[in-house]
Length: 205
Ligand SMILES: [Zn+2]
Image: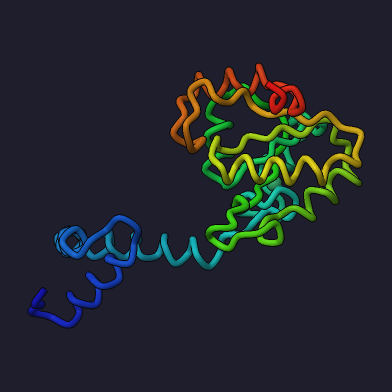
């Protein structure tokens, strides 16, 4: 692309770095911003840099948070005996949207994927073990995507969690699940949480 302005070119280059955004789309977005009021564009860029600079990860569950301990972990009404293990913050949002779950979460940050060079050490596993040691957790629910990475991660975590006297269950998978939790509709996901099954019987089927 030949740009008539270095500034335009630089902005397009930045937008092109976003996932799924090619140069044409980037140019369209940049031209759209140019048509907006200066204040609009200012607040757009402020929101993004503020997000990056000020966002925190909850010290307890590692969910994205505005505070050192997130709103879910600090809510007195949540059932502290339940911990739902998920991959990332999108999964927390998906489960929360079902309104069928009142426990806490643990965000792993990734799934084990040897192909991508992601091993157990890249996941927030030690802090999960620590929570089980010190907190009043009675049940851990795996709500990971029904992919090879999800299965590998559950298998690994199940072995690590064996030393604890807690229930280990997994959301009813294989019904409408073919992949990522975030794409599952709320009713299906809500139902699969309420009808979760013990992990041992889930694998022996
Ligand atoms: Zn938290």
